[in-house]
Image (cartoon, rainbow, N blue to C red; front, top):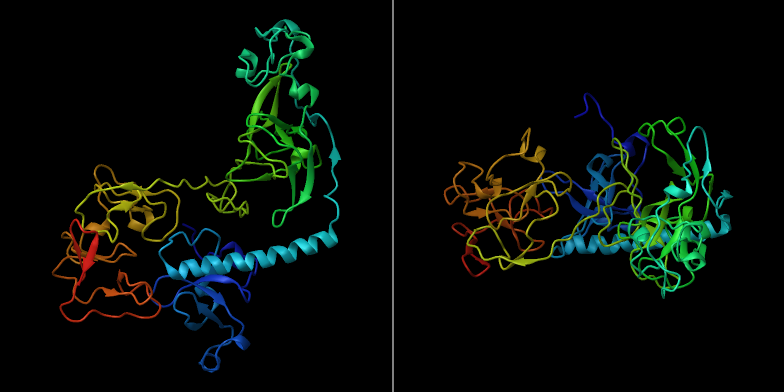
Length: 460
């Protein structure tokens, strides 16, 4: 944890919330809730007249349609992928509105970019890697180059569907060594056998590259070409690594964008004794499709670059592992913890306490899908053995819980549950007093919603 006063990157840079921006808002002890920053002229008159201080601005909550005056310290930007729970009306509205505003912003940016930038940024086009500094280039002796068993009479000698041992081991055949001679189909790097491509302006990710012809799965797409630099040119890298920098010099592959669900991948091949990096199709790619690959960047420190690939499994940031969506499984259990006991995830993706992903701890109670950050549990290290999460113990006495909040780990036994839970006005779920910005709607005296075993439902 940082010592003393700490400021996030947005505050340090002086970034402010803008009108028509979707944000998360914190109100009192309620849970963070999605809202849109409204212009004071566009809100109801009674809201305009509400008492507020200089620097405060109005927000319009999704789901409840309520308005509130708030200030910068109580909000943070909404990001694509935050609304992952399909059963929450407010989050669905926030996701739709965010997408709508993003599309509007991107179209304006695209029009502006087309007016200002009619050509890609300048770079020097090169066909092979260029050495910078003390980088060593390796060249193999012909006697050392592996020889495959393909024949010149084969239908597709050394082809993608052949049994060429060199291709299987990611070695390119040498034209003077391969038995197939000129018919060899495993010399894509040397002969630069690239499919036809074109550079184009994407909507939100700058310039990109797309194919003009169909590409089959496994086919060679391009070689990643640039300046080869050593550790003296790239001090942040590990010693003795060789880095290919396609910024100032490169070929068309430098325009390929990152994607968390790419249609191409990088492969290290040995060509004439040296290592080269090629891009190969992961799937069949139709003509006109943008070509992408996963950059696999390593993020150091707190600085992260937002990923705009738009893939269903997008991690949100470059260098963060893409989300893995677990297939729903049927679980039979009598645990008094579910509003939907018949169909559930084997494990959830986000911490049940704060809602964020990352390094998480899983509950070991059979059938419970909840996961948490160790910090959110006030633990200094990961629990060992058959650890059960706080959802299964009463917050007051620690005994087995009988009623629980469906939106956080708060839970209570029969003795301590009275007055601690209410039915949310927003979605009808049982919750504690921390979540609904519309305010609590307490149950009548004696009314407690309990789980009915084997029915998957609650009753009052």
